Picture 1 (cartoon, rainbow, N blue to C red):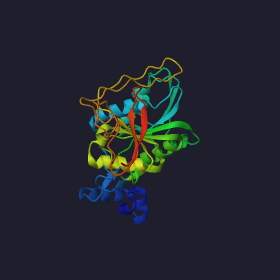
Picture 2 (cartoon, rainbow, N blue to C red; picture 1 turned 90 degrees about the horizontal axis):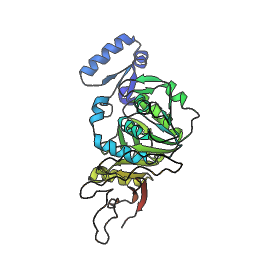
Picture 3 (cartoon, helix red, strand yellow; picture 1 turned 180 degrees about the horizontal axis):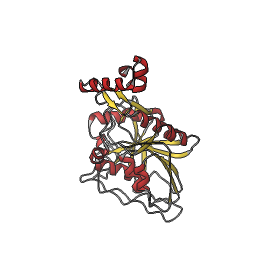
Picture 4 (tube, helix red, strand yellow; picture 1 turned 120 degrees about the vertical axis):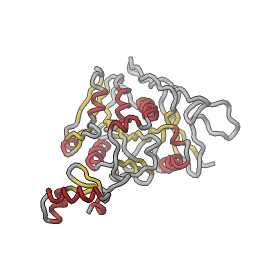
Length: 319
């Protein structure tokens, strides 16, 4: 059953084998000791990369600079007076810290970490979903969370996950988290995925957002610097996903909003020697423009930050 479904509850196992949950729990513990499956709260899942998820302390130290750069760039996509949903995750937590100074903003979230980051933002209204607390990532999940999102409509959804591929889209290792993320993105006109280069090409158990439902991917510039992830970017762009590359320079200060116009965040400083999203010295004829990746076998939408920090989407055509 675990192989067929990826995950199964102890109650379902007990029903199928016609025994008690106490007996099933003991058997599952023995199978885990043999490496045949992994126990989860109330059930069991397949062992290995498709189901393993690092805890929050480990996640905070993984690709920390990249997450910060992604959050800087993603914050420039939010307008004064917007209503957005922000999912759970360490990258979205970084984004929330930058949204605290956007006036008139309404943020709907199932993440305690996102809510905490915005708790003292006087000009931001925070709406929490209901649900059951999932302690490993401080997120509210379950039917209560999903039902509270029914009928909601916002301009943008910012979500993250455990893996992203052109074939399956965004995925995560937890079934309950996946269900809530699906409900979050269904409420939004635009779906913006925040994923650093370590997640590109990774495929995990539960799909949350199919590729054709993703409006934009905001990732770090290292995603374009290595062949496997660069090919994944090309494939995502061919599927219609807009790609924004965040430079790994000195983080910009969050934008200060003082009027109806939204100037966007301060310009990002390019890394030494330039980079995929930085300014470069004069290039020879035929070289890519600043902020563009060299086109490979595929064309695609490649975004580069302008002086305002907002992504400028450029069509890269096949040479």
